[in-house]
Length: 398
Ligand code: ADP
Image 1 (cartoon, rainbow, N blue to C red):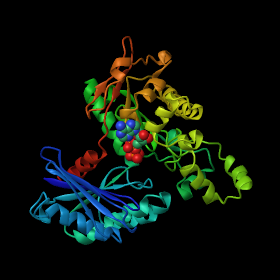
Image 2: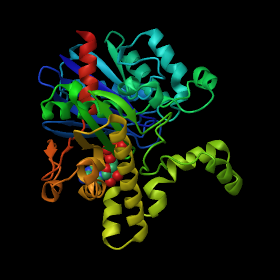
Image 3: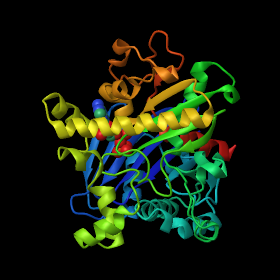
Image 4: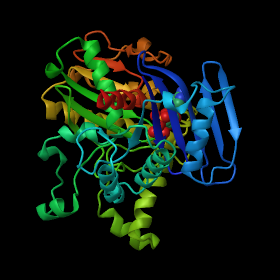
């Protein structure tokens, strides 16, 4: 069975074709700068990489080019489009209407459109990707896999905000959580590694990347997560502030003559470690600058590690214990300095890492970096959101 995974952003469309009998990636690629001059498709197979510079005024044209690339006589990987058994789409927000992945129908698409306002940065692009794909492959079954779905098991006391209950009911204002496919994948891999029944495990997963979130996974199910109504909440991120006193908005609006929208854009794009350091949102630049003595880069790293540490402490309390701490995504998998800072002085929770093991190079495999005498397993697990999407799509078909 072959499954195409599609992840559509506002000006990009990433894809991977999986052979689900082996779970191997046959080809991966992406279109960049859709709707902008200078659009490009990159297509990577075992044999090599092809780059095509071609105009892509919209997502439909991009999707058509992807399909042409997949069946191309030279660098294609399949004989015809009919070899694709299904498509799995990454979708940001379920709006609380779906607690799992679903097959695409007109009704499902209408619900997604209704929920687009909950994820204005991502949902319109996700929907464009789905519609484009549907137009060019009308007979192929499609599944929608939501970033929020893994968090649907949070209990009300974790997902509710302390606001007027009617506003929660009427406007669906609550914590949803994001990066769900990643938290799900790495927590399942951790459970396999621990070799215990899932319902006996207490795991904290730290997805630390461009956006970062921490989740408490109790008995294999999400019990709490750091992102909220939007992906702006939680720990400080590359350019996002993370948690902040909401009253700052009024003060900021007055001082900088901002509208509410300006304030939210500011908190999303000009803050986080980039805003604090004035250096970069990229942790490779930050660790280099800090090592060279840049105090603001060091401060940004300290704030990031402290933010993650506090969530770990909170979730140990929420779960009344911890068996395993998992690091994943760009920073979690690669930036050993940040893992070290987070795990330092965590003896009270029984967390200790082995410095030498922590210094390993990311080779795409699971690494156990647990230190001597640690009561908690500490693992680095490369995430694989696309594989989760392909697996869930397959499950919906059989
Ligand atoms: P996203 O998918 O959310 O954009 P990633 O999970 O790719 O983000 O993470 C990006 C972050 O990971 C950047 O801050 C980057 O600096 C950091 N990072 C550190 N080392 C590496 C590395 N070797 N390769 C890729 N990203 C890295």
